[in-house]
Length: 154
Ligand code: SME
Figure (cartoon, rainbow, N blue to C red):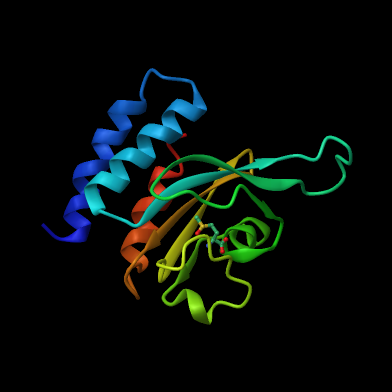
C-alpha cells in the first residue's frame, strides 16, 4: 500500500473514531494512536498551546499532550524548535533532516526528520501535531495534505 493509500484508508477510520466524542484529549489520543500504528513513526504526538495565566498578553507555551513513542520534552516556548516555529508561523513545517534545522529541539537523538502541523480553532493555533521519523526525508507534500485534513477533525 502506498503512503497515500494508507492515509486514504485511515482518514475515514479516524473520522468515525472521533465522531460523537467531544473530549479533545481523548480524540487527540486516538488520532495519534492510529497514525503511529499505521505508519510506524518514531514519535507521534500533540503539543497544546497553554496560555501564561500570570501574563495573558504573552503567547504562552506548548505543553506536551497525548503521544506515542519515547518520553519527550514537556514544554516548548513560542517560536522555539520546529514545534514553536510552526505555531509562531501558523503553518506546517517539514524538516527533511533535523540536524539542518536551526534551533531544532532534540527530544530523542534517534529522530532524523520531522513534520509539524498546526491545528486551528477560530483562526488561532490551539495545538500542533508533531511527527518524528528515525529516517531522513520521511515527510513530503502528501503527509502535509492529509495531516492538514486531520487538523479539521478536532
Ligand atoms: N523536535 C521538536 C521537539 C519535540 S520532539 O521532537 C517530540 C522541536 O524541535 O520542536
